[in-house]
Length: 360
Image (tube, rainbow, N blue to C red; front, side):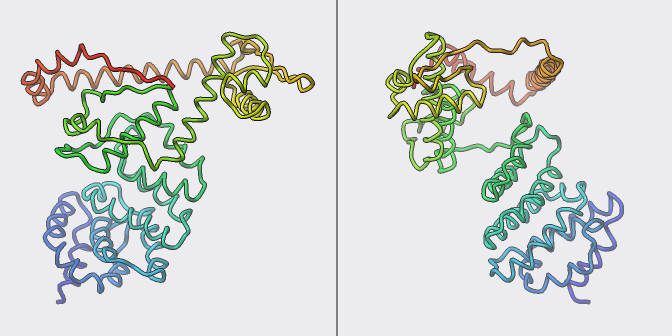
């Protein structure tokens, strides 16, 4: 029997029970190199497998058959195959080989981008990351791929659906030397901190790697034009909000001068946008160009507001419970306790470090 036909026969015969699937997984890992060497002959084998029943074997063959670069015509053929597999595959089986599942999903992203049709990958990747997640609190390597497709396809609401989830579980890896990923992450950390808080700390959190701490001064801000524009916009917004704490009325010209905008018209656009977003409460007199700042009209008496407050309280309570559980688990972790014991002197010293703040 042909070796590839033998592999298909083993996949078909060992995909029913957990014990069989575990045995099949061992066989597939041993056959992985030979499958890759025969990548051009693998695609027809997929027609003999049911992705919902033979998910693990289907995944290994699909991964090996799509490992080489493809043309636009080949991508057109591969995209529906991967999409159907993602929708039909067994969660229990694909989680046995998460690296291969992630690789296949990333190739789907690459293929739809090659076809200049990112929207074709949005729904499959959302399904894929949900199947890969142990819970909604788990951040997977597919989140960034999915969000990239959402941005390119302008499916912003779909992307927002996962950004609203609280994340507590993130896979990390040691970083003995500095790399481009860390540099880019630090740039984003600075810019997002400025957007959200109007300031950032010049020191990294204590859980950051020692390599990042040593090379802090080597990080630089560049090639982040989109975030930089948001920083500038948030600076204007924050400064206008400060004016509401001091003045009851103010002309658009004064606002433009104080906030350093180019003209009263530009100040009017910022104020109107902030009113629309609910960031401030104000009215503009078009005749004399005066802005009147108002108090928050919400009386916090409506059923909708009560439901909103109750929902926020429940969310905070759930977060508190989760943090308490995590704290208890870490406190009993022998690896953590031994590390803290060895580095207690450094941790005690760091407790007195006061990071500098840079206001904008």
